[in-house]
Length: 108
Image 1 (cartoon, helix red, strand yellow):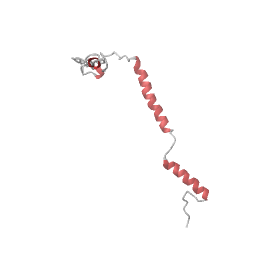
Image 2 (cartoon, helix red, strand yellow):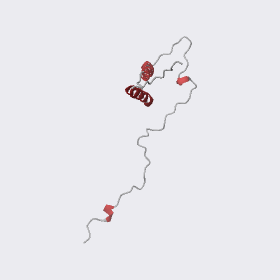
Image 3 (tube, rainbow, N blue to C red):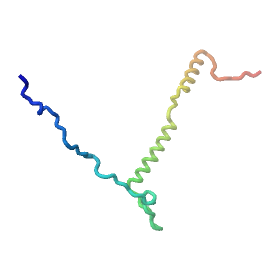
Image 4 (cartoon, rainbow, N blue to C red):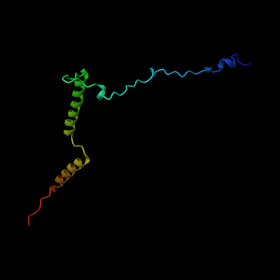
């Protein structure tokens, strides 16, 4: 005796019309038209001084401070090259054998 489920119940339902939805698009892209002014700021009238935003000083201190710190750390970085290690190892082995590792010319 065949099972009681019909083939129609087992069919996958495919929508007749698939909508092209864009869920995370949030509309058309925004575009700022070029104005010809540097950073989009109009020049101030003579005698006026530009007012900085509150984040600008923090950015300058963070950017140039981190560059200065990186320069100091790179200057004092230990020498871990293979050549330095090999030279020290060769000097130690020659001293252990009793050889001189430094060249000293003999006078004639």
